[in-house]
Length: 434
Picture 1 (cartoon, rainbow, N blue to C red):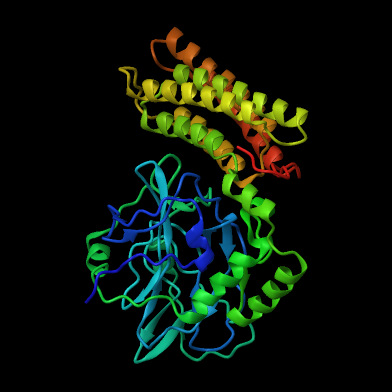
Picture 2 (picture 1 turned 180 degrees about the vertical axis):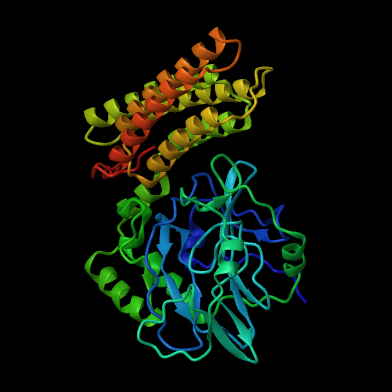
């Protein structure tokens, strides 16, 4: 048995990126982290699983890696395990100490802890429901795997294991911990499995990531969370596509400069998520949420106006100004979460929290612009203030008529959020952004 060390899974050039290389032990599952980034990874893209290329292949989900041009998407792909009996534990990003650290994936006799990240296709956040080794042959769970036209004899169907091992992640969050991250620690069993003998990614997997690192269409700063190739049926199929992209549109020095500062509205989204968390926990009252949402609306509108005036970007002075305002807003949210004002969590506050979380997700994915977020936050602020005023007038409760009125307002807010996320407007300025 040997200690599982960090494996960056990036091309050699990536080691020259000016990010902190911190080989410090992570708190979860005894995994060691060797790369850290100050910007959160983008949300996970939604894609279909390609068909199985041949019996014996195991699905490995796609993920965001980090290189000289910032985050880039490594396509999900079917691969052959290094030996019989081994399963793939995906890598994941974890937030700790104010930075996002990468925990590399590995092969082992069991699927260990991967941050609770729901990668889909059997990797629902806990273990693996896509198949199992039986008598030295890999058997596929037909409830998960896409066989396409391949004839597979070792098949079983188990939908229960899929349900029981799935962590609901409607916002497609790609990291564990921190503001807006997935809140799940490893189980005792996962801790135990972390001490098993682990095998590093195969040469084909490493080569697969190397091609993705050089494919400009996979850069988050270029595709804004929608990679050109989200998944591939096999490593060779993607390599042909990547080589064409590398030759026709190589990654430029400007791409590297922009990519390192690319931030898909993470700060704005994180503040909205923190408001949502405060409402759900009861640490933030509706009155406090109303003030926080109004502040976020003002900042979102300022970002929108500045971008409009500058062709889609922010100047250094504008970025500094916005950062100062977000710092003040962050302190206010913290104070509201830790003062003596609390409420018992209830359905009305949960509805408010859900709307805020949806706004945060829209900002992270790029489906919602800062201007659209400004409007949704203003509407939520008005609704939260109405709830606060009604509760104050009624000794802390809402009567039936008031609940119905608030529900109508929230229904209208919900429709607006849905419309803004699906109207075709997106945050995709040509240069780095907040």
